[in-house]
Length: 74
Length: 140
Image (cartoon, rainbow over the protein chains, first blue to last red):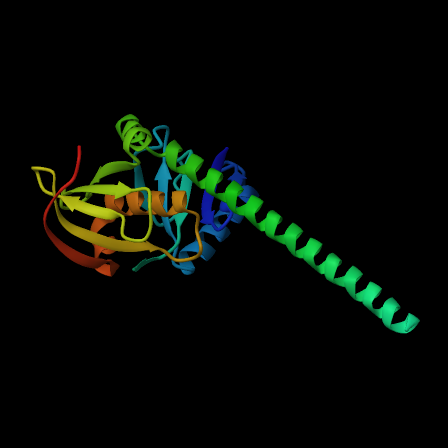
């Protein structure tokens, strides 16, 4: 199982999916595209959560993908 | 006279209900915010390295290195200006102000800043406001 973590005003919301299951993966891909379209950046982590990599689609090797909203200057 | 008294009794009851409802709503909002803050801090701590976790616990900040420049940044647990670029001697050379949109709890803001600097530093700094700073040394 993999997990998509989306930052939000409640802290985050988490969505588990199974990359090996076509329907589960399709749902996750749809969610990824929606978030990317809304300006979220995605970082995939595998094992060590302190070091990730920027991704623009689901990464089959990731254990978790964290989505951060678009950044703006303050 | 009886009508006026009945009116005042009803008014008092309604005001009481409104105050009680507002207090409950406020208490609920505060509980939600506290829960969101705790959740965000947990998510942040899950993504800190051992060194960063120690810095954060001991000093209320952690340091990251820019993915493209290799520059050293210190991210403090506060708002609004909380990202400082340090030189090799530990002096602040710039402050950077950027954050993710949405009313996110502080832990999420800190994690977004860390992830941005460690993974897409140039993009993050391209939108950030820069404040040049000279002559300030920060401990430790």
